[in-house]
Amino acid sequence: MLKHLCRTAGLIAAASILPTLWASSPATTTTTPIKYVVVIFQENNSFDHYFGTYPNALCPLGTASTPAICSEYPASGESPFVPLPNTPSVNGITPAVSNASAVAPFRLDRSQALTCDNSNAYTVEQNAYNSGAVNLFPNNAGLATGPPTPCTTDLLMGYYDGNTVTALWNYAQYFAMSDNYFDTEFGVTEEGHQNLIAGSTHTASVATISGKIANGSIIANVEAGVDDCVSSTSKTPVVMTNTNVGDLLTAAGVTWGWFYGDFPQSGPYGTLTPITSAGCLSTPSGNTYNSHYAPFMYYQTTSNPGHLPPSSVAAIGTSGDAANHNYALADFQNALTNGNLPAVTFLKAPTTETGHPSNSTPLEEQTFLVDTINMLQQSPLWSQMAIFITYDDSDGWYDHVMPPIVNQSNDSSNDTLAGSTLLCGTPQAGAFLDRCGYGTRLPLLVISPYAKQNYVDHALTDTSSVLRFIEDNWNLGRLGNQSFDALAGTLDGLFDFTDTPRPGRELILKDSDGTVVTAQ
Image (tube, rainbow, N blue to C red; front, side, top):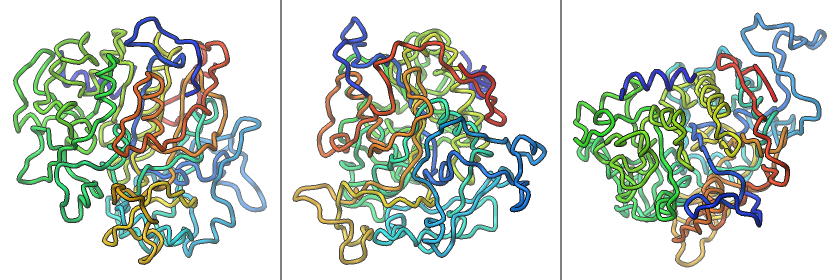
């Protein structure tokens, strides 16, 4: 049973395209055998920061003359990681990469799980890549902030390996991952969230807010403008006016929901009274509510401004209900337990379990991931499910791969990727500016009975590729209006839909250290 979700429940009370269609009704017809997509959207980690040395983890008690045998050092406090035979390599950190920067990448161990928070601002991230040399991360990322302290700009060259992020490495061993998946744009939390659900950070209600919105595009964090828990006097509320994937799912009759661990609700199931100011401070997890983590609340069509709960467990995921697809995490657990999981489920952990530096750690994140995924795999729905784990942005953490620039922007105030003259390339006439991307490379894992095993996909993809998978699986079409979904690479290479269903295939891990309990 999920420890966090049980705790939350107590507090709030109450794709390869196959020719064969895999369902019988228009609302649930899919182009693959996947009937349930679960997207776990975590926080602020680059690919190299978590997977730079995959699949080889250091045995820290060894010396040059006496290498350690990993299985002999549990007293070090780390979880020894030994890769499966024939594990493929990734485009990771090599000696040549280590010599490319004034500060070489360095290993962080389990005792350093809590780190400072780096800068991942739109322009700052571009500066770090230094016209493709990828050698100015410490120089341009800005001073990290705590806790813990002291903080330095060298920190962002640090990385973890399988002795700390053990669960993620084990998921990669038994399922599939990508080493060529990028943030859709350079920049921060809200950009990542908007690109996940809409493939765009453009069409904000305000064309310009100094340092936050430029040419109608979000370049720094702003607050949800259709949200009673956002004060217009103390925040910068913004309403997005484009179409998002929730609109497409609703129109197609597909159930969906965004479930967030810090989402306060106005009362028990069936409550129709909007939330109060005091209620906004009373979150299920005890952390502070953050509208950056509730991206559908930026849209009139998909918001739940009064933070109303669903009318019942049966109503979770449906359209026309007061909650309008925005929920607390306990609603996810209740829906899953009662066999009512929406076809498309987005999960956002509480702040302390997102993996976000300073607010969370890889170890706390691991607890949330393992508890959640163990429960999903033990559900009767598992045989038709695909779980995606990915991240909203890089937090400025180093990654040695220069991202391909598929969307150009030449705003001289904000775009500096290739120097003051070249900016971020030359955009086509009429292109929305201040959406320079792709941004930093990020982790992406797919956990499914249909995922290829111990497989690394090298196809070029980005955050909006997850959006594209949902669109393609339910034949939703594209969003248009320069959404990145039109450019997104497919995630089909991570799956094998030609094999027979494998409902018994699962990997149960231990949430304290990410090690394998059972593997089938």
